[in-house]
Image (cartoon, rainbow, N blue to C red; front, side):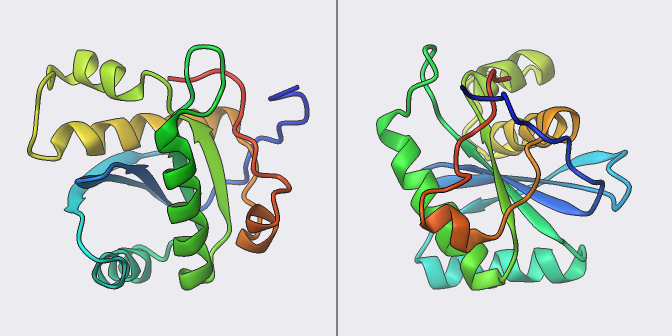
Length: 164
């Protein structure tokens, strides 16, 4: 059962990603997990180019982990985009040498649009607002960050129950 063994994460500087095909919404939090801030969205390119930008964010923010949204449907089942997000998240975490956690991003873009009046935004602000909601959800509910190797092996990769 999803969420049955959720451990609330220890506060640390984390980078949250709302991975899309064209853009990646980004948000970060302070090392105490008190303040969540949307960051400029990354307009997708080749993975190596994305990695350079994301590595810079991680270094300048002293990031200790990644939170990646997984798009699940209303029944909690993975969507077609979920596998893409899972592969991207694992590859990124392994490349950066950082642990990661998955968060159910069901309705996060809609919720961010409603909260911030960004419905229909194509600039990336909506994507980063959604990433901020994912990070807020993770700070409240977990799960704890885990090594990317365990995610690639298929263990510990289940997102938490519920969504934003």
